[in-house]
Amino acid sequence: MTKTDIAWLAFGAFAVTWFLVPNLETAMMSQEERAAIETSVYYAGCNEVRALGKAPLYRGEPGYREGMDGDGDGVACEPHY
Image (cartoon, rainbow, N blue to C red):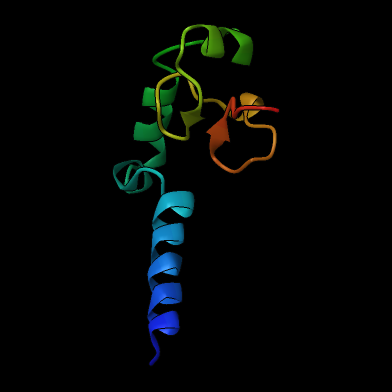
């Protein structure tokens, strides 16, 4: 195995950890636990979330809801450029 192969494997492990499982604790929660946390805070929309400095919201965090996650990737109120 070359150094390049090792580098790509390390990057792949990092990418999976960072992008697919942003919060391992949240990933291991039951749907009921996650729903209780998400509904514990309500934001009118992403403009409010951004104005409060809370963006982005990840699935399982207070205030997250699928209606604010346009692409369904588990990250709501992502920065738009």
